[in-house]
Length: 155
View (cartoon, rainbow, N blue to C red):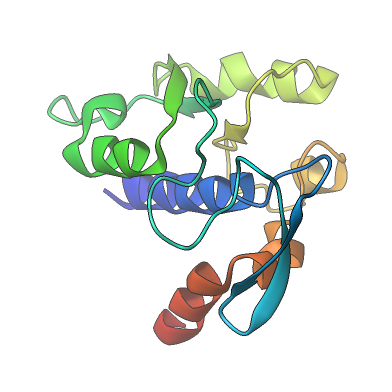
């Protein structure tokens, strides 16, 4: 259940980042007490969906649960987050027993094609973090005022 919560939190963070948009901007909007640059068709006002662009998707690489009654891709809470986001998720789920053996070489080589990756271990030496494959999400918290407020509330 803890792994599901961690993956769900990561999914929410990535979805919040996806709302920031890239490219040419059409103007500014107020989000919380901040003025945020917006795109014509990708303005995010804090309510679902996070994008109005059709066909947006995320790729998620994660392990299957070691519990036979838990399927991360079909968990109701995960499906609801994805539905509210207005995107599709392309899941790459690897068996929990083989996950580390399968994913570690992919990460070591940098040959990973996923937006969200469940790190195979706790990365105690920060090997993956220091490799440059991952973006520190805390640098983007100012663009995610709702998520930032939620974090401040629970921490």
